[in-house]
Length: 348
Image 1 (cartoon, helix red, strand yellow):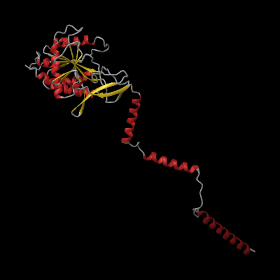
Image 2 (image 1 turned 30 degrees about the horizontal axis):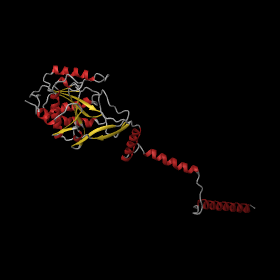
Image 3 (image 1 turned 90 degrees about the vertical axis):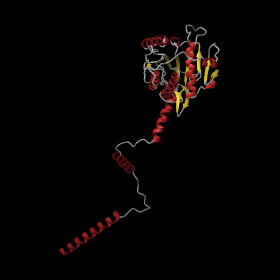
């Protein structure tokens, strides 16, 4: 009996061992290529989470923006600005041929009742003479001191593009300083008056600037030439502006315009106007010879513009409010060359 029990026990163990081996074989076998294992959403999500974590771990800082991306960003900003444009900016040149009186590299627009013979006026000569001295002989001042320019070259302008500012690093006085430095480098003594005459009140600017001129003439009796440096503005009825440019060398320069007043019509108290007119003609001629196209035709008009205060007064418009400050400064450098060459012809 004991023998039978022991045999039965041994047989049961054998059967259990065989069953275990069979289960191991079945569950360790590879899935058939024809069988489609189900893909659960939890499995996909876990995979994506692992990849994201890996990217964050390895990226210590954002990758640098490519030049194309930077360019696209700039275009987007410019497009946004352009959509807010108040008007367009057109670039053009006013040439020698646009004057209504022309002779020997001098072109002017005669807006007066006086008939001008340029050949005779140029031959008249000048009573103005400069001397060899280190004392100031030129005064540069600005009746409309706050006039300013565009900060960059564009074909449109927006509300934030100022036409006037008291910041003297950005307004016409910055251009005047370039002119003053250029003349001084050529041995001509200069006083640059930077007093503001058109702010906070614009009306009466010429009355205030006349006092400034008289103050410096009394302080420096050696001053022979007074330059009132301005900036012009040209806008059409639709609010579009014009920048006046010309290419001198490889750079773009703001065109210059000399303005000469006279005693005619209702203008009185300006008996010495021809002295100033002749100086302006000489400078106009010099600019056309040295840097062709830099000067627009001179404006000859029935006004005084404080030019009656001396016999060496010139009003100069440097570009327009649609030109850039850089263009205006370049023109001031060229103007210094031309003015120095003209004044050296007037030395005793």
